[in-house]
Amino acid sequence: MKTAEGTNYKVADMSLVEAGKMKIDWAESRMPVMMALREKHAKLQSLKGMKIAGCLHVTKETAVLIRTLAAAGAEISWSGCNPLSTQDDIAAALADQGISIYAWHGMNTEDFYWCIDRTLDFKPTLTLDDGADLIFRVHNKHQNLFDGIIGGTEETTTGIHRLRAMADDGALKYPVIAVNDAETKWDFDNVYGTGQSSLDGIIRATSVLIAGKNFVVAGYGHCGKGCAMRAAGLGANVIATEVKATAALKATLEGHEVLPMDKAAAVGDIFITATGMKDVIVGRHFEVMRDGAIVCNTGHYDCEINIGDLEALSVSNREIRPNCREYMMKDGRRIYLLAQGRLVNLAAAEGHPSEVMDMSFANQFLSMVRLSEEGKELSAGVHDIPVEQDQMIAGIKLSTMGLSVDNLTQEQIDYDSDYSAGT
Image 1: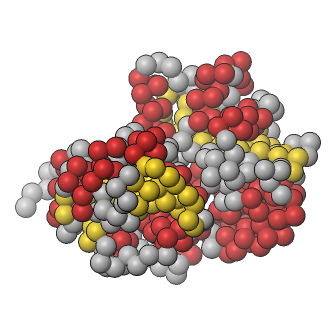
Image 2: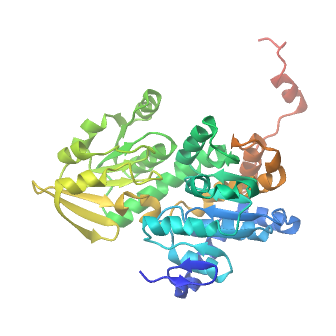
Image 3: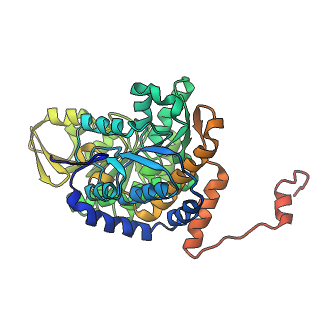
């Protein structure tokens, strides 16, 4: 595809600028926590002197985060963290506003890493990640940047899991704050954001009726739980598959059927993977799927569905709708793969609603501020979000919704820690 290039950007089409600006304006009207943080930290210039390299889905919500980082004084260089999740009008609008950005929808793997490399050209002091590809790239190819990097953040469950493994091996060379592990991220973004946006992506790509379908959710973590919740709300019969006994038990007690994938494959109508693990759906599962089965993924990487197995079992395939490819099996059955096995909520829809990303990106922003102030004192490794930050963000969110909570009296506070008090 043709791309538009400038001295500090490469995007798909600069004629999309106005459309992108309107979407960003809409997101800002739905993200009051971010706007409150922008107003405060623009005055303080909390990130002045910081150079932030970001690798995160280029959506209208991400644009609000980028604008807020810039308002607080940071220099920005950005790339998308998934080849199919960039919204080209948003990328164009950001480039028009002077943001250094390298991202377009539909890039190949070589382009993907080229874009990450360009964000590192200006020698960042902070890294901001979704999936940890930027951090991995620094460690694998740009070790000369270690001395200048104060710290970084990571947005996803999969990324944090891998970074903890790096830290355990002594391979992680700078501090990374686990944004994903903030309660105001994983218990809201992962559940309500993933659930709504994933169903949105499935419906946009297929236009099928969800009610009455056997809806198979692979992985009953926070993201899988959100998908199950929304599918059930639309009238689906939810079937969960799991490798973790406690997660399977939760699914059972929340009213869902639990089956191994080998059995679920034969009865499912719609399948969605949310595990972070490779080869969740493979050849033997495609062999027994019903005619018309729909398969998609909402995990960060595209390896959960073994597309090579699907291609090997099919005699032909065609794109029958945008983000919906029909695979014809040798016996005449048809299986439909959505969004090339990439994140269905971002590739086939617009990603999470602005309201829920308001809290996740508030955590990203405040973690950048924390690193700029304290990062040099933090050890290399993965660090948690302070509980106080979680509660502060939730409190701001509640206040913008016109809601409030009770406060403990001093007597209650004293009682809470009084180990001498009996029954």
